Length: 79
Image (cartoon, rainbow, N blue to C red; front, side, top):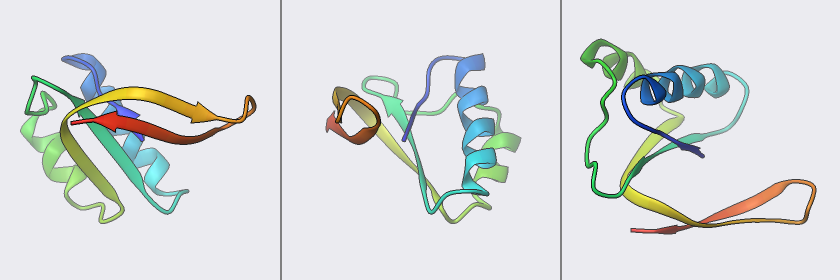
């Protein structure tokens, strides 16, 4: 999962998601609570739509990152 930020950070999140999507089964971009929309340019969002293994979840917050001390095993979300 990727947590998008504001402005240029979210554009980077979208670009990174597209790069990751070539190597992994699925990528989820998380857009913070209260934002409700991506700030990436429309053209970037259109490109994103061409990746069936990328999903976007809106209005979520990371509650906890779970792991075994060496790797992340899951992310607990609120929203």
